[in-house]
Amino acid sequence: MAKSTMKRKRETDPNTRDGSSDSKAAKRLQEQDRIDQLAQGIIESRENYNDLIELLAAAERSEQGKGGLQRHAVASLFGVFSHLIESGNFKKSKGTPQKEVVIVEWLRERLVEFTEALLQQLPGNENSYLPVLIGLARVETQHASPEALWQDGIFARTVRKLSLSGEDFANARTVFVGDYIKGYRDSPFHLFKVARKLLKQRRGDTEADLLRSNLLHTLIDTEPVPQILESENFLFAQDGKRARLAGSEQELKREGQELWLDLFKTGLSKPQQKLVLSKTAELVAPCFSKPELLLDFLTDSYNTGGSVSLLALSGVYYLIQERNLEYPSFFQKLYSLLDDDLLHSKHRSRFFRLLETFLSSTHLPSALLASFMKKLSRLALHGPPGGVVIVIPLVYNLLRKNPSTTFMIHRETRDPEAREEIENEGMDDPFDDAETDPLDTRAIDSCLWELDALTTHYHPNVATVAKIIAQEFRKEAYSLEDFLDYSYASIIESELSKEMKNVPVVEYEIPKRIFTGEGVGELNNLGQLMNSILAQ
Image (tube, rainbow, N blue to C red):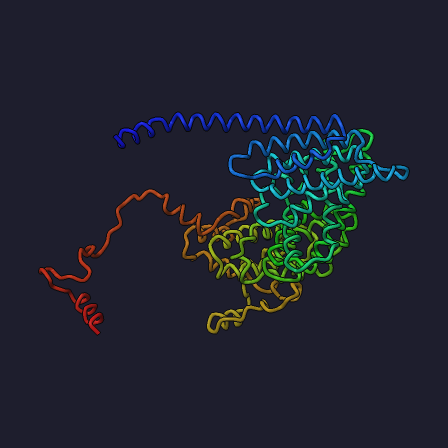
């Protein structure tokens, strides 16, 4: 009888659960209606302002299953605060009675409480809460002074929270930049102002490092100043306030310039320095109305050596080419970058593009060009195949463009006695590999025997490319881009993708045993050796 009773109870459980679900749904609807009534009451009468406390509690509630109710409360509060701001309930003047001042201050505190709750819950809710925050910031801006954007307004507090938060806010930062900074004319200007204010505040080392890192990655994701100036979209500014809220071209560049200088002063780490240098020409330099202020950073980076110098090269070139700045001993420093690590560097493609541009001038001394060709040829002797195949066409192009250096290909000794001495004893290469000044290396007195040696390179593709130097110069120039992507990975892929025409012949049979002999339980010589080792 007991079993039968238990069975009937289990059979009625599903109905009980369905009833419970209906009850929960009804309760949820009641709570939503309650939120709507509270919001409407606050809008209709200031006597209901205290109901903001209950609405804020609902918006901050994060219990399991309450997500829909929480978002409903957030949407209701957005409507309430937007209405209160637009109605002038957040304004106070000198003649405002003390009682009104108290109410205004209380409302402002509730708005701060609401926005701080949204900011705290941004991770995972970026697409829901960022529109609310920016929407309130727009309403606030339209009914307050422009300074509210970057002093203590909602936009400023949003930037501060994103900049001082950890990795869990990374997606929120990406959404913020992508949806509310990129494509707008005015919001980047205020982002620069807020960021500068944050950098000027004293902080502990850990917080300062976090701020620098987050701001740097945020700025790297923004658009260049010229692109910002072309935009006709405004996030905050209306027709009557565009001049004040968007800033002039001069003001935008000044804020960007000062922000980058402030970041440089904080002491960038090496990875951060590389990140900035990789974006200098397209993103950083256009902010500088005084390019000489950027030259110090680039000079220090250029003098660092290694991959940092290679990355700094593009920024230096931009200042020389586009901003007409002079860089003392430029080619001497450029020559110093030709070291043993160059052909192995992951930045070699970027470097050789720039190097070809630098050496393309027809006004450079032959001695200088000879030094670069000779040094590169020397490095190619022990460089990887991917680096060697870049050097050879580059040297070819330089020889083709500068006929006064072509005698370096094949320099004959016409004096019979000198020739006999060379054949018997050899000769010392007059090129001074240790000389740092490319005008004094005596490369012009040497020859490019290194390229001839490369015709016997172990890799057939390299050997084939090297032979172009010994052939008649019929081709005007080789496109360096055709050789920049050559690497060990591409070599392996090329070899593995080749069809095997003939099965390779081997001189031995693949063994079927490693340790055991032919008989059962027998060990071969290797097995006996291994057995004796294990027995010790």
